[in-house]
Length: 410
Image (tube, rainbow, N blue to C red):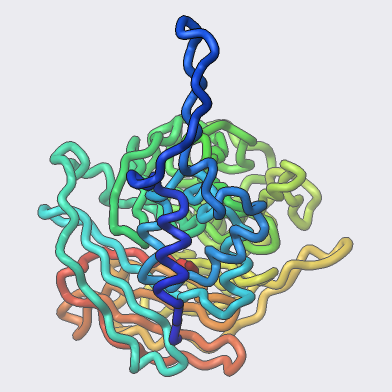
């Protein structure tokens, strides 16, 4: 996507908020030498750009080329706040300037590894771009992120681990620590809805569902989950936070709780807007909303619009399902879709790890970490929603072991 911007206009836009050392502000001499001199007027406050209302300033900022965006938050705090707003992304989308980028993040002894690619209509044309490892303090690499979950909010990707959280800025490549979850979790569910992040499961100590506000950098408990799950995954669709799969652990669950093998293919649904759990078919709050037909363990999931796409493992094969949210009294229904072409399907067992991400509303991308004896590692599989077919994309670089996907528009 070609992005053009008049350099002279852009220079004026940035420089108008910066102090000009050559500019002198005339001041009237004080009538009394003992009186306090009047306060100096801030050059930034007197600049032409600062006098624009937010909507006009956003219109200007939304037309800046992507290569210049990382420097804008450094101009002033007002720029930084506007660039983090949903209105900025909406304007970029309206002007056709949003860049759709899929990121693969992984940890190694050297630090955080990030590889990014711009999804194309032809998955074979995607080229993974591997940057140098981002150094991190040793205490960060002590296993806290061995089973981390990713959640994208705006241009930022939040890496949530066991008792630690990091924020990765996709514009600048900077990594900064953020507040950890209130309860230490491992192999839990995490998803972003409405600019906030929700986590559940991954611990036998509590059934609490936590909500993270990036602006306040704070977590709070918003609900109690019907089941305590370990090894679960998440999806966000239609303003609903789905907690899917895993094993039931700890606590005294209500009557009607699912057996272990059924729980591994089931999901609970939390409506963020109302703070209520969607009830199961039996009407009990503790009953899961839906169970994948034919059994199997859910190993990956993501949401697109009002649909939830689920990968389920059956030891020697992987099935692919779409859950359509029901309306009125109808809970919803499952549709079986074409399974992904996972390499070495005959040797899947429990050795294959998956990560799923929705790319806009037209594609689902699955990352399958297959042992090298099966012939591939870091296989990228792309599902075209309209065509209903899978395509094999280029494998991730072999250095990105146990990576996870996150999709960002900016």
